[in-house]
Length: 300
Image (tube, rainbow, N blue to C red; front, top):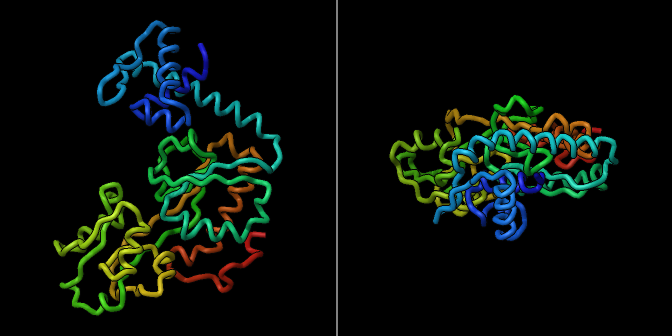
């Protein structure tokens, strides 16, 4: 039995189709099919039903899935152990909400390049709460308190929200406001749930699946949006709407697999991210920048 065959089995079980599993593994879909068939031949069990709309686990596949996941965890632990004495250089995969990547993380990581100059950083956008981040990333930044007790976690900061619109729109009577809201993928978040209730059947001019789209729509004057303070303050056209709105804030957490904490480059990046978020904590929570916005000495 080959570990690689088990890895392909897990990818197909998680993604449900050859094409999606192939994209995740960065291989051709024929390779996924061949590897899974090889595993089925080895163990003499049918693991998937091949259906027109995707591959579904059989009862045997379901029963073996947790065992395969445990094998995967042991392989990941072994891989991390081999890296625990490595230098601080090398590749790091960071998963973070798209909301934080372009507007907050990348500009500020650029100012601290000297602290991670030996590392090659790969950042991917991810909105899932925790999911299987350790299959796809070394570190993860998430909104909301993590529920997975197997992960080490640090609370980095609080993300505060406000109601924002252009000055012209803000001068309209509240009963004439129209709103910019999230698409289906984000409508479950606390701030969007609050906006749904607050709108009280007033119009939504636009719904968008990306926070950046809601930001751009509000800045263009399409309506009122719930936006993070740090993001809204970057647009000269946006003003905060006055009132006691009591919009829920979100906790920002850094997640790391316990085995990975011994890897020097991952620990270095985790410390840098912690320093960065703590330095800009007031900006994230209230929209107030630190006295020196791009201080070069923070965290040292």
